[in-house]
Image (cartoon, rainbow over all chains, first blue to last red; front, top):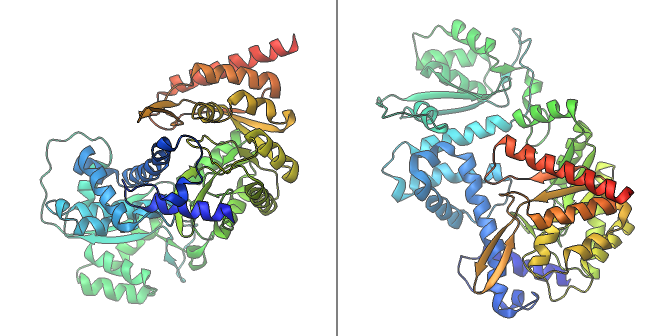
Amino acid sequence: MQLRSSQAAFADYLSSAPGLAVPASLESVIGGDARHIGSRLSIYKNNVLARLVDALKESFPAVHRLVGDEFFPYCALRFIAKEGLSRTSLVEYGREFPAFIAEFAPASTIGYLSDVARLEHLYLKAYHAAEASTGHIGSGAFALHPSAQLMSSPHQVSRIWELNRADTEFDHIELLPLREFLLIVRPFRLVEVRRVSIGTFAALVALDDGADHREARREALCAEPAIDFDRVFGALKAAGTFVLPQDSTTVGESK
Amino acid sequence: MGAGGPPHAYLEAITERYPLSLHGVGLSLGGAEPLDPVHLRAWRRLVDRYQPALVSEHIAWSRFGECRFHDLLPIPYTDESLTLFAAHVEQFQNTIGRQILVENPSAYLGFATSDIPEADFIAELVRRTGCGVLLDINNAYVSAANGGEGATALLRGIPADTVGEIHLAGHSVQRADELELYIDDHGSPVGSAVWLLYAEAIARFGAKPTLVEWDTDVPSLGTLCREAERANVIARKALSHAAA
């Protein structure tokens, strides 16, 4: 059981705050010159942290671009200190990052930053979601595509995201005080971020909750009395938003 | 390991054109804890779906309790770790119904408790489980430079007919407190000492599928192709010398 106790000590060391001394229980199992054990171990500790910072950078490229190369690692390390090391896949590790940004005082001057992060996380979920067939939805039962994600924001979040996800050059953008309702979905090969109306959004939220076609129509009309529901619904169907019910829970668990 | 999406579309397209080598980093075969059954099932689905030519994992651990470190952490070479590692390799091979290759690690430290030479540890692992070896020559070089047993000892100690794949990569050197550490960071061209060892490996093990790992500071495709071509040239030369 020596292996188990030495890995427990190693794991404790990796999980401890940066700069803490190497515990004696770990030091005693490492070979070589005792003066250098701290330097050798710190390579692993730095790697573990760097991997998480890099994973967050890859998962939130627009947030990274918006706050810059200096602030992002600072923010990421504070998140890691609060969240602890990873207990899941690297893709899932950033799940609470948008909420953290919303509460993180140094980032609070950028009101939309947390919503951009939320959009990026939902984009990633849609990207890795299970496949499902979008063909042949008749008049019978159907469900939202398994990749579908819904969010609303008081900011023009999809516009900010679009301009910042790649190295698009732009001087400034004029933001209007418009609430956005978004459907993020991957019906075919690529993830699509679609802006929808408030009534369409209400219908999609209802469908996501398990409502049927009639209930979804009622929700849509409630939120947006002037909506041409049949036209909107037909367009969503044609764009691959729905699948047959059994297809929405296919292909096992994700990692 | 995701459920769907572009990564799977790419894998499918690649599988149609080339034999696939699936290379894992997260199973924690060297961990003192039981293997993660969810991760094992994900592996089985992946192998069933893509029927890869090669499957490999590392001589390392990366998980303890609930924590996943997403890094390849070193194990001591002892009877205890050998027994446990062999049991995990067998469980993995049984789960996916085929042989795996295990990769020698890059180490930044050694354990006072280690009492089996690395080459013997790997040879015994192969004997007990029937697994093969993924020989990472940069790892062998980096480990030796960081105080290990010497890369040549590893190359000569691994049974000749067990190597199924070779990895090459660049490394960097970091200095702290009068200590010089070689870091396996996959961010630069393959070093000249590693190329020399590659020629020696090809002469001993024959031509094997070889991967140049360059996944940080990724260069242009042209630079990558030149590295791959250099590997081809060195392999051809080493083979013709060996035959002569």
